Length: 203
Image (cartoon, rainbow, N blue to C red):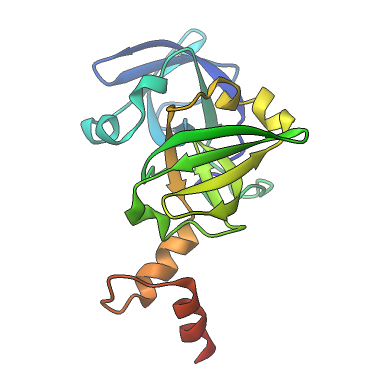
């Protein structure tokens, strides 16, 4: 389990045959779980100043592998008693999003992210979403995308400063939205949040 608060930007040393070697100040142990660009991966090797995680073929199929170069976000798994900020993140990437618009909004910047429509049901206005492991708040939801407003501090300290139109990103929707939808869909192909409100009002 993670929070979506990036610990540091690690440097990619190599990516070969599904093994990703990183250089970072953080020193994990063999078997530790660590989110790399939002994907929960297991540490399988440690060397002087570096550690290696393994990406299964399934992970390589789902993730935006072109971003596993240069710098990447890392966050170690939460420990019991850690201060909880951000939101509850599993490190299970649902799908790829695509940066479709970048516009200045005062001192901040609006990013519009497109995603496959089957995942849009889990994106809620003022709800949480994780982009490459960064916990963020959704401002608006559209027919095939959503809008984020990112403050300068976040941009300067994450990969957001490198994003361009067309950049692919790892996207994890809110865990509670997924659970609520699947608990109450009752065999329906579609369930709106008004439907959820109506169901909850009966109890």
